[in-house]
Length: 636
Ligand code: WT7
Image (cartoon, rainbow, N blue to C red):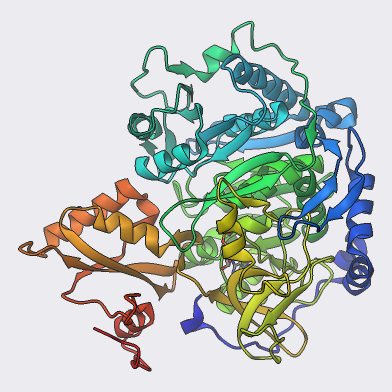
């Protein structure tokens, strides 16, 4: 929920059972937290050396000399693909199941570590044959199918930098991201299944590539088998390439520097330009695997299901990299949660014996709407832990998830983090007491505080800005191609102190528990998707009828927030219902279906400050029928 619907901390506690605490990897959070904070470098170095392979060791754990451009495991040689796959095929895990996959139409695949390793090697050789070399960017536009995982890992293996663009983004958004990364190779699929229908991904790609001539080769995985256009000399079928002799099942893993880039992931910020968050091989593997192991208590016999999309950071870290590093078995489901009936998820949990489910508040709320009968038809007793991410979870949804899905047995890990942080930052572990709606406390090694504008810690119960006071291994290293934006966005607010500004407001309660309230910037979370007001506004004004636009987030019971748009039309244009529909369709193509406003209103004026900045607060208050507050800075 957002600021407007935030309910204050409650004194409602939930404690995990003794059995859970005793069996957990971490059964004493406080002791571990104290140990980590006494020497964070020693703490991370120990994890890095005990749990991962390195081709060459580091000379220095953390280099702060060019802050905020921090470096971790300086001088070490590694490759995350080695730790995620190569090393497992030399152990008993070779025949362990890495992924169980179910497509929306009901087709299935089981992929062992050995099979995964072979597919990745083969596709790595295909990419090489297409001229992809170390440091080259590869854009990936795919849905939740196994080929997406193969492609990401194949890039990592040869030292290429992947840029996964969520398959719900439009041709324009895709083209902007291709151009920013300057990718010569793009990997996609013919179409994906969603709610029983085909989403024509390749059509979107054709249009994006027309706008981005930098792309020379397009590799197309076959999924829906509908008729698509294949441009000769540019487009190749994934399966046909994999059948060529060049796709041999062994490809040497590239030796990477710990600080070499692993991927770019575009996320929304305060301007319309895509912001390429850059993560690296070394620190990222240490942090993501440690957090997954301890927070979700991953054991060899678990069946882990992170229901996110690999197109977002959650999928990068906790579908692809961390579970594989831990040698875990994961489940991936391709399609929509309610298809064909609202018990699809519960049927799959029962059938596959899922032990841990990690999803988002918006999914929980929409499943909740269908009532308890659907989950109650299924045996959910395999579940032992639950998780949530993406936005604050309202206590009501938390309690429903806990009672109806977890049968009051399963602690809920409410993990607060960001694309930029790479992994969980404020999060419970299965051994700590929980309060519905609070992400609880920082992960060991993380120094998180809630401060005012000057940087003073705010007293318990008061709002402030969430900051991170010490670097951590999976922090973003820069904004791709724009180091000034990296410094300005995250490090300038508390430049003197050298703290990271997350962009969220939060409170601490008297127990030191953190309650995240929402974004302080022009970012709107719609169903957990992160959208920038500027992206949507520039999408609207790119329509010839629109002169000016302002976009706000309005609290919504199901989606967390929905988008309201206010448009000033160019002189002489009539603002009617047909134009509303046209603008919605326009946004679908400019940004993507997730950015379509719930409401578009035509206005003559927008509330602005004297310096011309739109006062979103005034629009928000008006839309919700609330008092508008201080208007002394209002110009129009
Ligand atoms: C923003 C980051 C990290 C994976 C998915 C989102 C909000 C995220 C929580 C949570 C309250 C949360 C914050 C944050 N957020 N998790 N558990 N409780 N708010 O990544 O798209 O980069 O968005 O999501 O506002 O800043 P993202």
